Amino acid sequence: MRNQPNPYVAPHASGGAVVSGERAAQVLKNTYMLLGLSLIVATGASVFAMSTGMGYMSPILTIIVYFGLLFATSKLRNSAWGILAVFGLTGWLGFTTGPIINMYAQIPGGMEIVSLALGGTATIFVAMSAIALVTRKDFSFLTNFIMVGILVAFVASLAAFFFNIPALALAVSAAFVMLSSLLIMWQTSAIIHGGETNYIMATVTLFVSIYNLFLSLLHLLSALSGND
Image: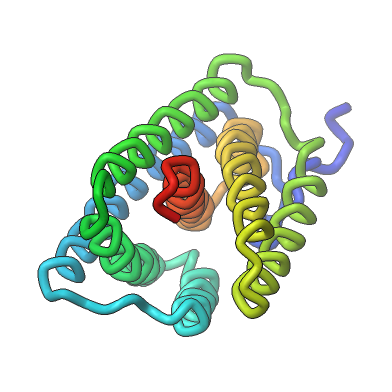
């Protein structure tokens, strides 16, 4: 079994090298530390956007800047500059979330929906991380399902936006809730099993999962409340 290649295969996987438990624990610690700082940066950027009354950001602009920053982060992932790139990426996503929250703040019960989405996101993150950490199970068998699922959901989200199909948009949100939840569990498992040794890219994966999870829950809860 030890001669088999590492089963975790992701665009940013660090060569598939098997690492010791001590090394994996260090990667996990660094990932959680950087993730915590990234959430602070994103929250600050979101509050700034809300306080300045920034208007709703174009999804196309959001995606273009996001992929640009993601590319930069990937290129700089093995240097200290990669940490700044992570803050740039998470700050941008937080900044684009501010106008969305402001929009919900203007409708009856909107902030309750935001609070529920935040609470749901935190609960799911803790639960899925705990499953990976407590069971120590190898979830690499989910790799292809998650990657293909995200690609399909992303394409479907573009179709829902350009063709204005509310039902498809709801289905996409539900799909992203499931896929983001699985991705959190998968990434945590990849770290503890040595499938991801770069804490910068692990942080990005977890943050983007949290971001997509929050926005998807926000959309679903809004629809269920009749405000969407």
